[in-house]
Image: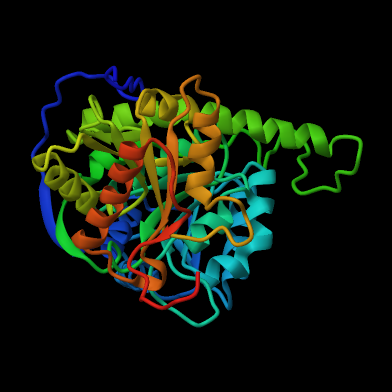
Amino acid sequence: MAPSKMPSTVDLPIEAPPANALAINGGEAVAYALKQIDPEVVAAYPITPQTLIIEKFAEYFANGEVRTEFVTVESEHAALSVCVGAAAAGGRAVTATAGPGLALMFEMLGVASGMRLPIVMHLCTRALSSPINILGDHSDAMAMRETGWVMLAGSSPQEAYDQALIAQVIAEHPDVLLPTANLIDGFSVTHAVERVNVLDDSTVREFVGEYEPGLSLLSADQAVTFGAMDARDSYFEHKRQQVAALERAVHVTAEALDRFAQVSGRRYRLLETYRLEDAAIAIVVMGSLEGQVRAAVDTARERGLRVGALRIRLFRPFPTRLVANALRGTPVIGVLDRAIGFGSPGNPLYSDIAVTMFREPDKPMLKSFVYGLGGRVTTQRVLEQAIQELADTLHVGRITDGQTYLGLHEGTAK
């Protein structure tokens, strides 16, 4: 397999500036970034595991460390509604939520993207009821994926902080002007305490810049309407414009990652590849499982299996061309979903990979795995099981079984 082509960043040497290291969890890391950004409006309702962000930001607000209008609303629907109004008036608006809170916001997700408002949301991913579960999986993020938001998925408290800054730049870029979500795995990132290297305030201000809306409800020189009735005469055209903006977001995100590398010394890509150059087996994953997957890849390599991994950072818009380039020539691909596509022929991330690779002349064998629902711990043994199933597929030359539920208790009906 040829080396994967990753034009999402420029390969220039980066000298890391002196770092300010903090031992904080992922939620507090996002709150620290918000303190440095100092948005005009933050509106939120506390919900586990997002509460760490809002509690800490409320502390900054109470101590007078931000000038933000901090709006404590009665529901998540109201939180995003406040952000819609603030952004339409020309303000920088931010919210945060998780799981059922996102579900309650759902009506407003399409309103925010359809009105082209650059709101930033920090989504602390959580299982959806019922049964009630407050722990982390990707069910909420996958429910959000077709609502027209840009979506970035990090893997650590450091990335939660960094992407909080990067998301602001993407959303407000004049070629995009779309709401953007920073996906943070519930508990495994939000509550994990690690070393986080934060930038100094002046660097953050320079990187994020001042938001200068082109048009707003407060525009003095012309009348502006947001959210008007749009029937059969132009609704279709406006949806097509959203598609075009999302397409431009791929390049804009790559540029933002390049800029961030220059100011931070931390180089991120739209896709993160690991040992894929000569891989016969590839594992595709999103979020905080990346570290464990890399460890499993290393173990498999020691056994003589040519295994590699691909982590998706930019989930929406899905970087189809880059994914195809990265996986091209790999005979067997296993896709790990932390959510179920109920009633669908494929789970969410698997479906994206399947459609992407279907266009390839040498179509790989694809296998679907579900893991970690409701916060279930995914062990190295379980990942080794997945790799062995993929190795068996490579050996026999065909998919011999259906979807695998990794770590499922024995005796559970399929």
